[in-house]
Image (cartoon, rainbow, N blue to C red; front, side, top):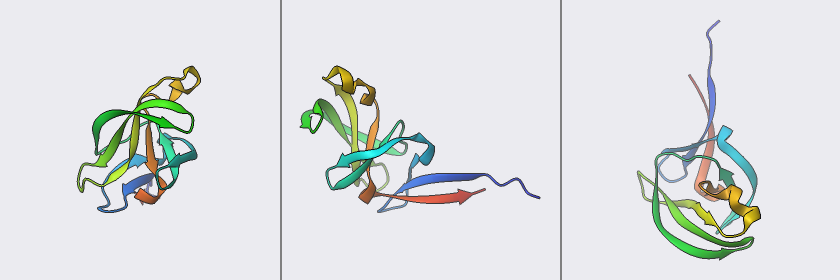
Length: 108
């Protein structure tokens, strides 16, 4: 019997570029600009745009839009800084919007 390795991956909805691992999801209970968002500990094959201060539902943050490095589609944002002490856990993490990513299971 072959040893199969399965990975649950998230891809850019537009160009299918691999952008995140399912195992890196911290929470699915976030809100993006266009609906539901997922908080990821890491993202890959993305470009981080300029930083800006923005007031979100849970307080003031410095965030930067996150773009697919292949097609330049905005996928969500990265939390650069949280000004509220109880929100510091988000720093360095990524919100990828559910409407902008596709989940697939890949076998090797």
